[in-house]
Amino acid sequence: MLAFTFPGQGSQRPGMGRPWADHESWDLVDEASQVSGRDVARLLLDADADELKDTRNAQLTTFVSSLMVLDAVERLGFDPSFCAGHSLGEYTALTATGALSFDDGVRLVCERADAMHDAGQANPGTMAAILGLDDELVEVACRRADSEVWVANFNAPGQVVIAGSAAGVARASEVAKELGAKKAMSLPVSGAFHTPFMMPARERLRTAIASAAPRDTEVPVISNVDAIAHDHGDEWASLLSAQLSSPVRWKHCLLTLSELGCKDFAELGPGGVLSGMAKRTLTGARTISVATPDDLDKFIEWVNSAAPTGATQLEGEHLFAVERLIVSPSAGVFTPSATIASGDHISVGQCIGRVGEVDVLSAFEGTLQAFIAVQGERITLRQPIAWLRTL
Image (cartoon, rainbow, N blue to C red; front, side, top):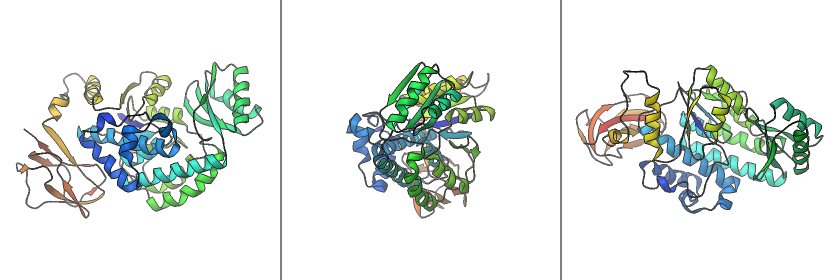
C-alpha cells in the first residue's frame, strides 16, 4: 500500500526547477505558464528566495514542481493506493488523482494564492511552530493567550503550528514555553493561514472551486479538514473552502493512511519535510523524498526493497531508458488511432489516438508494445495510454 504525499507552501527553493529543465516532464512548466499567464519557468530557474516567499509565487511553483515529479514517477509505471497533500499540497493530490484537471488545478492554485495574499494584506498576521508540547497543551496556550491566535497545523507529535495576530502569537508562544514547550519558532510567512483571518479568501475561492467541479476518483485523497479518505468529487467544494480557515490535521491524515494499510510514503516535490513528519508520527513507516530526476533510481530501489522475496524486481532507470509510457495530455474519452497496432514503429510526435478533442502525441520513438487504455475509456490527465520499447 503506497501513499503519495505532496508538500505545501514553504517547501519551495531557489533553482528547484534546474534539475528538471531537460527532462520530458518539463513540458508541464510550459503548460502551467500558458494557463496562468505567468513565466513559471523563470520562477523555477531564476527567482531568488525573497521572490519565492511571496505566497503567489510559492504556491504556484510548489504545485508545478510536485506535478513534474509525479509525471516522472508515473512514466516509470507507479501508481499510489492513496494520495494526500499538506495545505496547498491537497490541490496537487486532487490534480494527481484526476479530481481536478491540470488546467483547473493551475487556475485554482493561482486564485487561492491571490486570495490568501490579499487576505494577509487586509488582516496582517503571523505563524509560529511550537515544538515539544502535546497538541492539547498548545490549544490551551492559545486559549490562555486571550487574543486572536489559533492552532493552524497539527503536523506531527510535538510539532504544532499556531497562527494569528503578531501579539496573539507572541503571547501564546510565551504561555506554551511556560507549559513545557522546548521551542517556539517564528515562521517567515505573510499571513495567518488556516485561521479565521483567511475568511475573506474562503469566500472568494468558493466560486472558483465550484466552477472547477471536482470529479470522482479511483484513488482516494485524505482531506486536511477531517482526515477522512474522499473519492466523490462533490465533497471537495466544501472541504477545500473550509481548509483555508481550518487547521491542517496532517498528523491525523497520516494516522488515517496507516489505518488504511499504508506503510510506504513517497513525498513527491521539493523539500522533504513531510517524510520527517511521517517518521515522527508512524512507527515503522518507510519514507522517501523524490525531488529531482536523480532521485528516481533511488525510488525504484526503495520500492524494490519492500517487494516479497522472489517477486519480480524493477531494474531502474536503465530499464526505463528503453521502456516508456505515453501519457494523456488531457482528460476525456480515449479513441485509439485506427491505423496503429502493437508492433508498429512510433516516431516522436506521432499521434496514437485522441482524448476528447486532443491528440495524444508520443514523446518517444520506438516500437508500440500495447495500448493500456481502451476504446471509449474515460481518461484523466497524465493517465498512461500506451507503452513502447525504444530499442
